[in-house]
Length: 284
Image 1 (cartoon, rainbow, N blue to C red):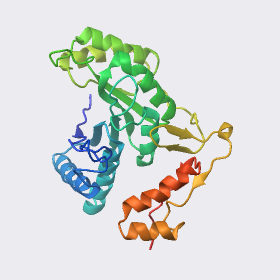
Image 2 (cartoon, helix red, strand yellow; image 1 turned 120 degrees about the horizontal axis):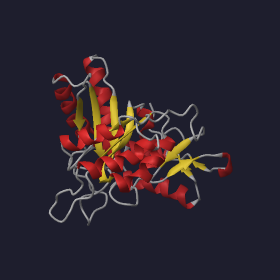
Image 3 (cartoon, helix red, strand yellow; image 1 turned 30 degrees about the vertical axis):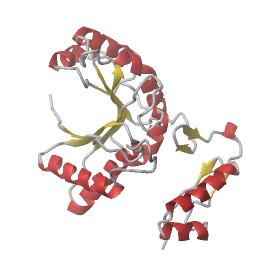
């Protein structure tokens, strides 16, 4: 059987969305540009090493993931090499089904769908038994391939994992029998014995069929929650003053790096009950 090597691009120990300082929620210990250059360097090493695809994984902060996606495009644009397929893999922190930066799995998917990833899925996080409902939500949203590679259950008091190969593979067979799997594997606490048991358990199951039509063939936006503009939503008020072409005041503040004052423009639109904010930084 053919084997392919996925080069893992991890989340790093820094986050663009959350302040590491309790006293200053605006503080960040890394910038977008620094993170992009770090990712470009890592991607270059992986490509030089001969990987077949790139896997941006264990995503706890979608902004970090966007920096990694940007870095992939930046690397291949700089080098003129053929772009490799990209897998995107989020991790949820508890039974709320949210990433560490607060997004639901549906909101995460909407945030990264522009990347046209080879596959989008969930890894690490909870054990397979607890993750199925969140993975099913992702399958409902994603018109492309999905993947899941969970931990061998939740970590125990000693930092280990209690699911043996039989339990682990049985939990994931529950996904396979329902036709939810395109790609499947294991993360923390799993060993070759877990993967062998899993492969044996699911080999007769049919893979997930891609939907002929998207479940939501309408505009999809997201913040921490998904915003799917179905006809039932009715009229939506879009605040356009966070737009360099829509507000001279906002443009002047941004050009002067007066971000706190620029944020007041955004807050004013929220106070006037805008449903959606249109951020646009394209300008001369």
